[in-house]
Every structure is written in structure tokens, then in C-alpha cells.
Length: 308
Image (tube, rainbow, N blue to C red; front, side, top):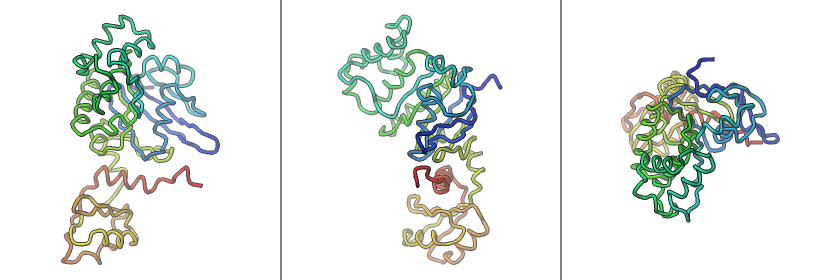
């Protein structure tokens, strides 16, 4: 096994009754890498993250996380991983300092007070340390959550949709912090639905209803999809989209601002289908498929594991 892998797991599987929430997933993430974890709601991202950090036991699979066996070494993994959940889960009637002090106690952090003060300073929270957590805006709550999951100096951070509901400025500041921390050697697996955030990651893993469908850099994931995409401008794009979706070779027709992106994985069939719509009323231009085009394509071709 390469020694630079923070995560190296194969065949990871989790079932809940007849539902297979995570189905034979292989994933490798290098130390110091930011890996974006993409997929629709209910696709198994959170379940996979909880297996990695020892909160759920896999039904099948093997591998290591931070050098520890993902099954036998779950307690050791927990001590070296920081997990940031989807929801703010701190005591809102305690101050920021008190919340972080409580988390530091739970991890038995040595020199606890100094560690809390250092964490507050590192994430720009020192001036607000006496403020009640319940009074924070979404962006500041996010910083507190990040400070809390780093209080015990973990080597790997597992962040589950950390910027949901946060304004664009706070999201940008958050990602600047993530890249600074990665530059210091921390490894990240970050679940996100935002395409601009996905493009900030070193590598991506796309999971569709329990199965890993794509893995690699942004360029590699886009290339793997083998999509051909056309952009079209003109009148009545909604009606045009409805007509195009009925044509062979058109996998999706989606509005992007004042244009329509029309994509398919068979370039010749797509060209034949759009030929009848290439009139003077519309301006057609072939473009490079973007990550969002690929994301939509992967969602549409993923079988829903909740469907009967």
C-alpha cells in the first residue's frame, strides 16, 4: 500500500435491511489532499463518511484510514479524525469558549485552555469567544464547528456539507482556510453540492445512490463522462428544452441563465437530433462540457436505490 494515502479502502458496503446504502466503494485519498465528495441527497455520502470515522461498522469491505484498519482500528481512527456534521450541534446557550472547552474535555486535550485559545485565534474567533453560540450567524457557526473538529489536532477532516446555508462571502473565506490547512498537511474529504466548491478540490469522487461512478481530478471526471454539449440562445427556451428532451441522443437540456445546455454521450446522434432546431431564430455553439453538465448527467443515469 502506498504510504502517502490517508484513506485507502476497497469494497466498502453498508446495508440497512434490504437497502444497500453504500455498495462496494473503493476510494483512495492522499495525505494533504482535498477530496470533494459529490452526489445527490440520499446517495450514501454521509453513511460512507460515518463508516470511515468509526461511527458505523461496514458490512463488507477492508482498508485503512490514517494507517489504521477501518474495522479493527476504529477507536484509534476516531482520535485522529475531525468530523463536521451537516447540522450545527453545539450548546447555543454556552459561549464559543465554553463550547470549545467542552469538546477539548471530551478528547482529553492536554493544556486544554491553551489549545482552546489557539483554536479561537487560528479561526478568527478570539474577539467573539464570550459570545453565545446561539447568537452566531451561519458563517460564524461554521467557523466554530471547524474549530471544534480541529481542537484535538486531527490528521483528517471529514466535512459533511459544511457550507450549506452559508452566504457566498463566508463560503469563500471557509475555502481559503481549507486550502491553508491542507498546505499544512491536513487531509480533507468534503461532501458538497456546490459546483464552484467542487472545482476547488484537488480530486473528486462522485457517488450515485450507493455506487462510486467517477473519481479523479475535475478534468478527469469531465473526460470520463464523454459528454458532448451545445449551448443555445434564442426565444422560448423552455418549449425548446421540452422538445429536445424527446429526441434520441439528447440526454438532458438544462437552462443555464439565458442559455440552454443540450448534452448527450453520443455526439453523432446528438448532432442529428438538434439539426432540425438549428434555425435562424437560435444561436447554437458547441462548448466544453462543464462539471455541472456532468453532475446532472450522472444523477440522471444513476438508479435510485430507494426505488422499488
